[in-house]
Length: 308
Image (cartoon, rainbow, N blue to C red):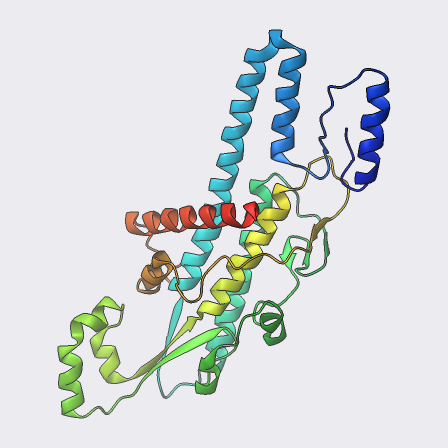
């Protein structure tokens, strides 16, 4: 039975009428409102009706399972790389500089990078950059129409604005402030703490000179993870026979726990050269391993959300 998602009440009527004709081998499979489990049920049902094709259908089911897992792996790695890029992104600003323009530049760079990820996810699920009918999270022409750094948008999805705003940082940014003119005592203390500062990815000499470091805050990372995951869920449930716009209306559970940020993101924050948004990208083995670890964590979280 096809095209049943929009007319669930008709399903039982079809079952009843077909049963009167002694047709009891019925499978619900909507090619528009796609369900992977229903597609597998379709082929398992065919095996019962056509046992001579059981081996071929087993091969098909195995191939479909492999393909589904590959799509999820690919999608999770696309999102994980975006999160690592954004977490590692930072801009240093001298304390005597006006950082306003650099903050705007940071926001625009992150938004552009996220739009590239949307298009990559569409491609991973073999969809075109068609217009999406929107509800909670609007997309048009393969781009999010809700501003990632809109304070009202953050509140709508239950996230707080950055506390760093009080220190002069724009929405979605945090600012680390160190001042020049440290006393000798303070400088000695910094020397003693040099190892810890180095572990956090900061040059001790730049600390002493004084600078500001702009970073993307955790709330923004959580919002990126949330809406990209919603897009993945929508694409998983969309059949290629559908002629309508993709509808994103479900309000997903949080993907990143702000009380316990995943270690791969914490690690990425320490490595400026891991971000494609910075001047120089170092695509090394540690960065790749971090992305894969974060992708595995995302897939596990997706599994939890989809099972609820």
